[in-house]
Length: 357
Image 1: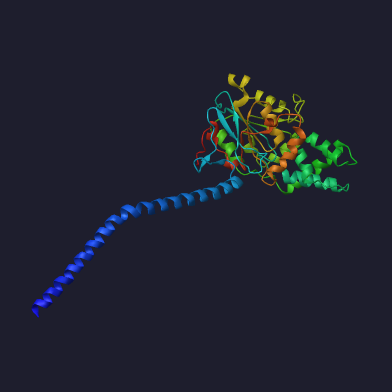
Image 2 (image 1 turned 90 degrees about the vertical axis):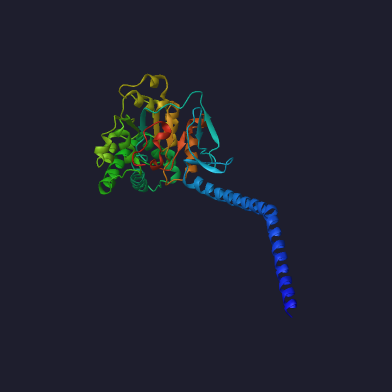
């Protein structure tokens, strides 16, 4: 009995040892064959997931943030940068809003020393008041002021705008009568609702003034409307070195898109460096219209386009076709396109970085 029990125990123990040995050898070999394949599959799934994630956000950034572009070669985002020989240019004629063109230059991107701003629609949100005043006038004569009409006049001097509206809408009044009625209507509107600053305008102006970067304004507004629009922001606008009002300036004989307004505005800076005499690329121009962009580009300056966020950017192509049909399309291509002044990064142009960043 004792011998039988002992044999059974030893047999059970032997079976356990054999099973453990088989189990050990099996799992020792299993990771060497199965685990690498499993890791490779996980890595492959992760890469596919990451690429899909990037493609999803690439479309989102193209729609919302035009100061980013997607590097398809490396599947990651890159901020808009200026290299020594190449500037990335937003293709404003492409519905995809992709950065797919390069403006090559034979020399390095110059360090910006002076800045010139447009006024209406860029620093001041005057578009609503201008449109309301114009609508009230044309409705008296049974006419309507459409979006197409508005796009035709964006960036034009006040006197030119008045003539275009009177002629295009066939109003039974003279240009001087239209301007007189406009001043009355506009004054009533602004006195009730002061003209606000555009987002990011005050921050950028004060930042440039803090670092003693000379700034100026080149606008198609008359002095009457300029004083009316800026009366609640006098302290801010006193920081500009000078303001060029093309309709009333005796030296200006041709308005935007001619380069003359920006050339004259640049000439009035004090202590102009010698590099600016033959090369205006060290002057940075902010504009909200393609008419102004063409004017600054033809003057040889560096341009940033901030189109009005209330208009579809592609509808500005109508404006481009109207005034640039006989010119190369490159005249209307800015160096950078942004949705707002709030998105501007001064360091991209060699200017001091915002202190609150």
